[in-house]
Length: 58
Image 1 (tube, one colour):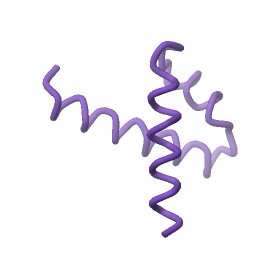
Image 2: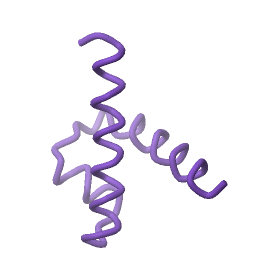
Image 3: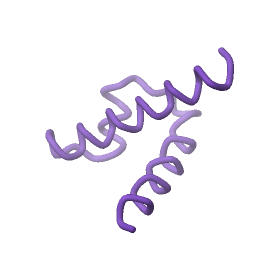
Image 4: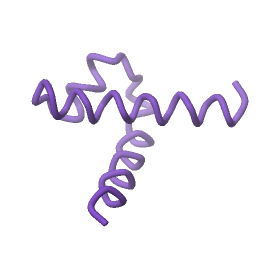
């Protein structure tokens, strides 16, 4: 997958995780379980979530 496509997938996944956390009151880990995110990719999504949360609080 090209970098642009992967970036779109990553942003969409982050938005889904945030939405599930807010609407379903699930933890970050629970959301990743539901979405079937492999364990080896979770640290990347965790860092992306932290960045997104920091930006949204500005």
